[in-house]
Length: 389
Image 1 (tube, rainbow, N blue to C red):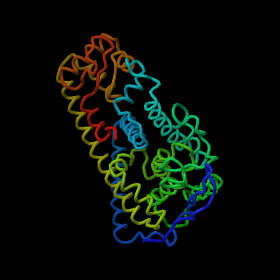
Image 2: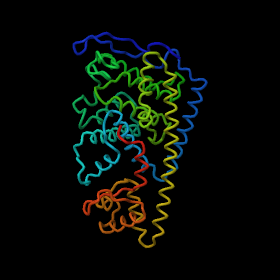
Image 3: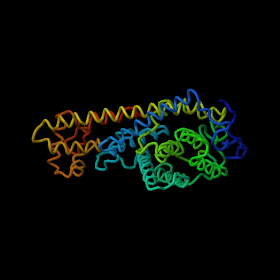
């Protein structure tokens, strides 16, 4: 349905030029979103796929193991959309402080690491019964921009100057968000919409609408895209749709970047919320289904590798403990594995040699000292789709 403009243009002077900044109308859309028909079917498919994802997370012997890996994959993908060139392998090495040759001041890696910290902070706050609110959104932004690029862009504060998307200045930008003076009212309206219970909208639909509204408001000087994608996960987790934060749409948005940006623009220009929602719900279905399949593949792989280790006889006990360490973090040095497993360096060295002989682990550096090892097939599974743009 094409409603026409979903906001008003506010003429103003910014950077010495007259520009037209877009101020969105409050949610929900008017006239109301047409959910019947094909969109209702898409919603049902998405909810079914989300339900399967939520169920399988409850059946896992150690859901934190998968959350650790998925959070880092999402951090890499979401940051890549904003232009970073870091890979998941880079991040895992960056977090392994003993890893030789990994610069701890690499700005791309600092940015991705900040994303992990911001996601962890948000989930911890929500689990502590802190409300999903503008205060929490500002907190998350503060963690996201705490170090490295963006640390001079008012972390944790709504912007007090004009920003723009695309172009070199507001007058030639692809999109100019609301004036900074309108941001507090826009964000207050979004906060009310997040908690509304009288409009009959399913939580998943609310998440899709809220994401577009946040991206349109663009309330921060930097980091808006990453916070906007986090908002989807936080809203579904806070609303009880997902008990564990396992839904991340950045890979889907990365794979369909041009469609994603075109649909955001169509919402603003034409009011075509239904086209956006169909795209969003298809993404939820695909990502949830793929995540379930990945979890099932990894569980089968872990069981098969454990059986192969057990078949080695008396050496199996130590190797199984090291195998658990690699499941928790798929890139390890011998020193980090020894510390995590509570074993001697020589014991871990022997166990890792066995894992290498079995084809479970692979040495990464080619050096005789300060060697690094990866849980090869596990890492390959996680790396899928994370190649830099």
